[in-house]
Image (cartoon, rainbow over all chains, first blue to last red; front, side, top):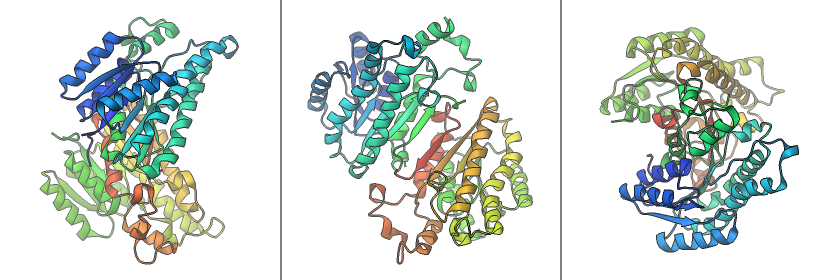
Length: 254
Length: 255
């Protein structure tokens, strides 16, 4: 049993930067061609594609908002045309919420955050899972959050969105097992990405995330590669009998 | 270069079944291994020779880990054999079938004690004996091999499920206590795995006539779980790839 994803093609939403980029590169290193989706940052997407290609795999980038079903149809059709069968889907695209109380959160923000995480995940599963059933093995991974365990105050949009996204995962796992598709969840805590740095600046006034290393689990802030490693594990032969599972990668949920 | 080069592991119940696969995989990744067994010396010698063929050190140590003094002896002898132990896999166990799968209302205190001792007390004894010296290592890992019984709590599995649940509680507690010492503590919970113990169970339950393999077709992904499936998760959890993972539980049951 091994840790590779040879000869499989992956689609990683939000794959141009941060955790998504690390996942795309991790899957490429373990043998996969990778399609990434991005919304705005074309330059970052092209840079990620170049890094995938430097690893000897095919990389493609598709612009679109995963919350929009038609955007997803367009991206999925293009990806399948360009790359053929896609047997790994990583629902990673995400946005943070503002950290307001429920009483101060606008209906628009709820819809936006839920849109990306929940409708985006559902859209991509809806469009990619049918062809994935033909693959020898399929994998769908949701990048969730420790928020689903702590459900803390000032986190309503994100708590709602990630909890609903996990519900899709647990449901889909039951539905698609008979088709050889594994569905699992990786839940990061604070990770050193642009989003993570913005979060600690906004919530704790921390300008340099290095200041947080000392007080962090295992004396370091979690890196995008830590999340990528868990994703690749789930997609590998070592996890062939693992589905419907959730791993929090946050140095311990305490 | 293996992912576990330089690591030193103790696997309880390592001579057969899931334990044997864990031993083999850890050795394949570069670890030296103490193989604890209870009754089957020949099997222990066989897997030890496989470990040696892989170029690793293997030591076989007989001990009934459900007995406190034997668990303590196992710990002491393991350290003496390898110098230190930085991976502890609490895998040894007995099935509910071993006590006749009684209902809670029928199970005797002896039934209950026997299962608690095998899984919960044994795990605690070995953690108590090995964690202090593990703190000196660059990294330590404790993995409990639990069971889906500790989440489904099926009928007639009462005393087994309770024992496994207690073992899991030790894991979750220990994870918090030892994180600062860079010791990772996690749980792998197997479902129905192709082992002698599982075959005893399904025969006792009347679910098969002759062989556990009769259940394969109706199992997740059209197959039983294999011991290697458990070993794959254990190897991951003990590796650098899981260096930010602790206090977690992976069910390996295809469900």
